Amino acid sequence: MQLADRDTEATREALFRLVSGYRMTQALYVTAKLGIADRLVGGPKDADTLAREVGVHPDRLFRVLRSLVSHGVLSLDGQQRFGLTPVGEYLRTEVPGSLHAFAIFSGEEPYRAFGEILHTVRTGETAFEHAYGMGHFEYLAQHPEASAVFQRTMAGSIGALGNPLEGFEFHDRHTLVDVGGGHGALLAAVLRDHRELRGILFDVPSAVREAPVFLESSGVRDRCEIRTGSAFEVVPSGGDVYVMSRVLHDWPDEKALVLLRNCRKAVPDGGVLLLREAILAEGSVPPARAQLDLIMMAMTGGRERTEREWGALLGRAGFALQRTWTNRTGPDLLEAIPDRAGSDP
Image (cartoon, rainbow, N blue to C red; front, side, top):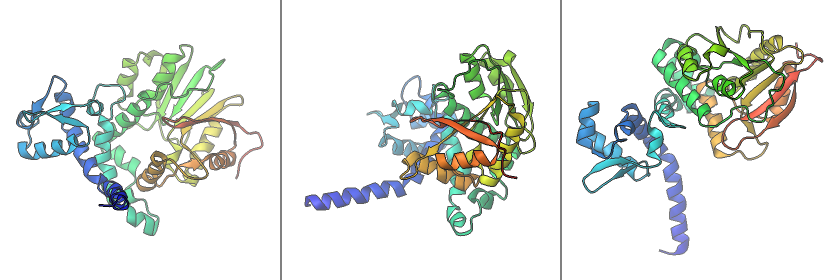
């Protein structure tokens, strides 16, 4: 084969791997759902042993796990025993930066929703709503197990990234209100670093179901108040720093404006609003952020935004964008303050 031919084949193979990605999503989902990684902590095991432990078909389990060996997630020794690799360690449940919940979440509702993304492109209707007959957050409110997986996914991603509000100085600040904070992972991380702060965790009842236990285990429960409600109706007063972490990207502009305007009513003069969101470049977009934008399109009808778009949206809600911090490993951070010039009617 000529060099040019080898290059052509490599190019074709790269596209083939992209097209085939759904297979690995489901293989990882099955492995995470069955808790295989946690069962390999003590050492390698064969598929028959693992199948007996989790109650599944041994041959089918062997073939799924074998597919992950070639991708470096698991190892397979001469006795046909599977073991954990450094990559596979992140499928364990109790390791820093665990992707266990994310692998389960990705293989369930989003997987089915993405099968309807052509419908979204043709009609503009959110793929999730077309597949499930309701919005994603309405679905989570009605399905506690799915909600728990989603909240663990969100909490795990915050815990893996260090200080979630790195760059912002909390000098002379007293109360942080986390709007849409779920379990309270962000709030707990900040309160651990700032002993002088108190916190208010605000979200719908289904989202904060596990928050008391989580905040207690994080050692900050005595400085946290949990309030429930919908930010589409009202945002609680009482804070001088408000944060929304990866909330607004879930919604198209008009719905995001409702949330921001309710925040504007709650944030006092001298207060500040912090947004943890991706800031897209005006030109080409890194693959991870382009994929995230597709997820929002399919799951909630939301979108990722450029700094210019964030500034315009904040301005319409009565805020002035003050500064931003970029983060290569997670969401960026935007700081906005009340703009006395007002907002769009």
